[in-house]
Image (spheres, rainbow, N blue to C red):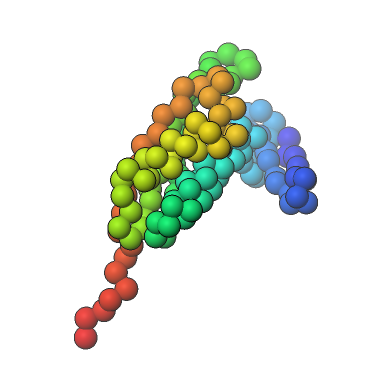
Length: 135
């Protein structure tokens, strides 16, 4: 139950199943990779939108939580994306707008998942660690 997918760009991705389904738990489950792909897609958009707006963004991480239907095909029914964004003088409104644009216009993965799931988002904003040291 371990599978290797080769992507169009020539990269490989290993997936495996849970032991109770015949897998050996050696890699993420296929549906976990779907969520990871959506998180990567939307994070990419958010960073790009903020950079194009000339905002000083240092990092962006996304934690995804989800619920699935109890019966087959067990599609995602709820997905929450929580963004942690770090940057200098980043306006909350710019971050909120970047997340909104990603989920409504640019992120193919989350827009596709939104056909079966209720998508929600939240974010927190951080200042970068100080690089100044006192002598």
